[in-house]
Image (cartoon, rainbow, N blue to C red):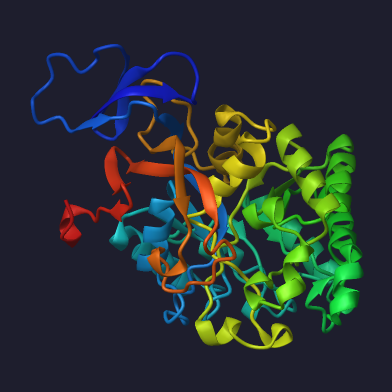
Length: 437
């Protein structure tokens, strides 16, 4: 495959990139000269080449809720969004708390072949927070689980969390915490603030997140372990991350695209598409999260892609399930909030959407530099394109996007996994064994 006239990281002069046998074999002007005529040619004039994106936080719902998403449909959404690797959370049915389930998720992802689907194992049995799951068994299985999380539930018992961190340290795996003190969020459905008070919605205080972030930083320090904070949503969490890093604690954090763009003013319509966990916060939190992502205090962007059936969203706000679609719109939201505002350049986008997430979970074949000899897990982006979001046009089974009818900048044109195109111009390409090209 020969990619012509492309800008690496959006910098310098256009160049050509030659791929063969799943790796980058040459970069430079006219590198394709003299090669066989059957080389697939991509004219990438005006486009940017980045390493393929890595999502540490996605919900593919399989097994158990295939009516809302499947590994097939979620993989298609990921490929169309520029992702070459995603991490599928454990809150499936049955819960991914055993090697049987985690290996199934890995195998299904490989069967589909559009993106590497890495299973996330549960920290506790049944996500119940009482008994540690068999992390060692899942880590040594075919799925090679390298991250564990009870996402959707906080591991709120400090002793259980401490034991999980100690266990993870000996295994060389990562614990990802859903930071929410449940005793502070009973019945809560929206950010605790003026908007929720005026609308009569039960409030969700920032302290519910921040108290767990502080606690787990200290537990990780004492256990000599790493901890990762899922979907950071408050200015206070950004400040706690700065403090913990200053103490030498091995802590990382992610932010979602929706927490970079949206705030709780969206709740005025009572539309449950805006209900998410943690909730949309105030504009001041949005500004702090953007600044934290720009300066590296927040490590990366993770979608928290959460498909839901229509009946779970088109209902009373308090009764609705929390979550939003995110895989196909993530790049555009990052371009809107970070690139167009001057907070990040395209090399910075590569850092927060590809390089840093791959480093956090130790993926040696993802998030690599655009250099000769590196794996050809790549994405082509048209920075000048604009498109309008329409839920039914997205690849997901569900349509719960908060960006419906929004006009967004930048679009993925081509996604390449190990030298093979998985998505191009809005269409996915299945592997030949599945009837694709």
